Image 1 (cartoon, rainbow, N blue to C red):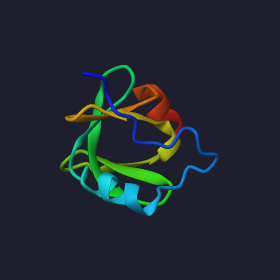
Image 2: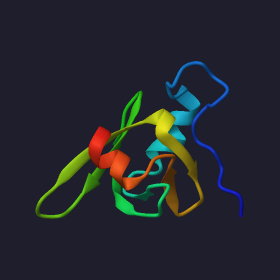
Image 3: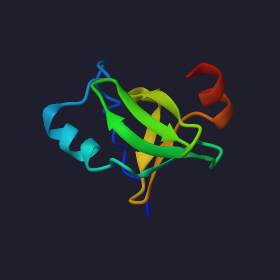
Image 4: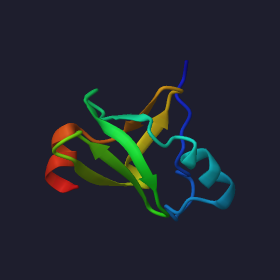
Length: 91
């Protein structure tokens, strides 16, 4: 099954359109994986330009992933265009 893109790549803006926001909100608590297939946590919140990912239970860390770094949703996992190292170093 081909993953469906969630970001609007053809648009010059990385904002979520109102009708797309419902789709993003339905992904709360879903798993997020990097391009190197590492589970970095679950979607905690969605804002205009970011997906907030929460990692950990006791030592909680939040990653603010720019919408333009999201590759696709495959029905189970939100895939990112970046690796785990890029997330840890740059985000």
